[in-house]
Image (tube, rainbow, N blue to C red; front, top):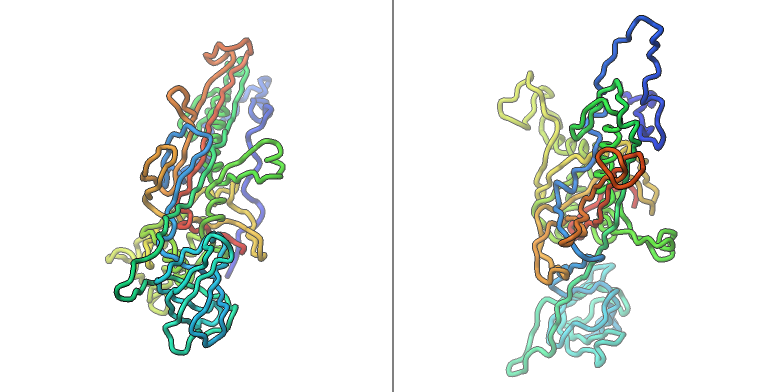
Length: 479
């Protein structure tokens, strides 16, 4: 019988961190007029396990210093020339034609006399092959035109003014003629990002630092003791460390005219923003069939074709991959339900059956890794899926190419090998802003002011560089 987890009781989302002292932090239920002492569990129970969500960038990236307000790098452009919005001024059956390039970003005619081109009408697929016989007398001024002579006896196979795709596949010259006229200059795509400053602070007065509690507190980084401020200070530190990663994932630039830009903030290009601008988007939530992954592979073929890729997924996406791979088992599709062909050859009915998969190969190697950030209910976990056309809903996963790539680093002034994802933080010989922490006040060992308190300050200045964003795939709901 099908069922579901009831909505009540649910998981707690109310933050335990407050700017004022909580009454639950102090002993108020011990009545010393009563001769009986309650039996207490001193050690705090860690009911949520490890609550930190930072790990993604540590797994896939690296951290490098920078001493500038802007990080710039150059990525290779395409090697071959192709245009997808070209129209012919000639009628069907013509032996020659003047073609006009109307692609976005084109500022000159890069086609040269003597080159051979393939021409195909976008809507119906009729095609021709032709040789370039002339180029516009003003190649750097619109309209960008060139003249071709068709090889086919029937001439142009499509009507005039139909959008076509054109690419160059070679050249042909007559005997005893001069060489190619003109040369092509390689172009790079220049990208940049800027670091942002992140801060946090924790303050406790000197009196409360000497106030012992009855609860033995522990934190994820091993701090333990009966002083409550230890817990609050360490949780502030852990929360700040998480923000160092999530800010790199979620950051967006402040668009001119926006409220943030008007207030003087500039923002930064986070991973999600960059991939949505320059990468690949899967808008159907989670791909759950081989046909879906075939479409992803087909797109990767058109991009960098990185051999190994890691998909960081939420729980639904993880299960969909497991179910897809398990369904390929012959026993699942119609054989005995008591056997399984996956796993070790000595599987038996008393062994624990592993229903999860860590990866598979389909054109490329895909490795699967659960991403806690997408599952945590206090972060992106549990957000509503949105399938309304034109709107973006829950992000279910991110495909990240493994390895590194060569780029020209304009700060260093040379080619450098960099991971596809890495963090640049501000640093110099006298100032390192990767992760700064310092104590002010007159308590806790600090002697910087007459304030009877200890203030712990945290600061970092950093940005993330997403190299080769065309190799990434963002999986989300919504077109």
